[in-house]
Image (cartoon, rainbow, N blue to C red; front, side):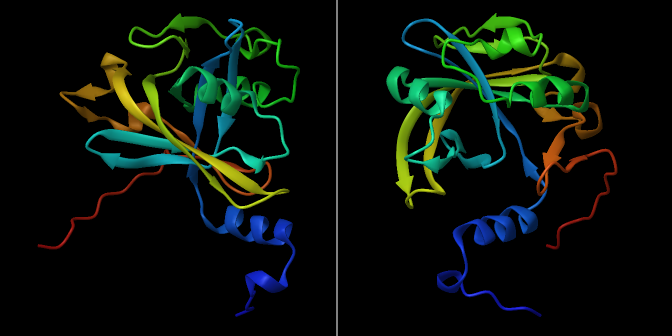
Length: 201
């Protein structure tokens, strides 16, 4: 075993270890709208569900506070965002939306996606996504410093939209969902090799 003491290694090396070992990470495809009405869409692999009551998710733009992240700016200024689930069919569009572009560029257009309006909040949804969440910002927590600090955005899910083909009541068919996960660098995985194991007692 090689032992790495965080205080003794470069911050980028710590990031490589973290992102290479905490895998696969779900992808939060975050939809926001600026106060000027420009749609924004970007994928974040520092994303997860963190509470059930109220249902709460988080996404964490890294490179803060120096990096410009339109998702973060828009969520901070408007108080809302959407999460769109990325399945295998949407991998190329998700990747296209990850490009660094100016704030007045609409990634829905550049990725060839259709905007569907959220019903409870003022934010765009990826119409092609198999599921989406409409979220209100609960709090934003700043962690760390540049160059790899994060702003962790916590949002309460106020609406779940899920394709009927995925559902058995409120249970989601995982094979039908066909989600992807992020690994290190440019590597992703597809959750199409599933197995069951019973939990004890």
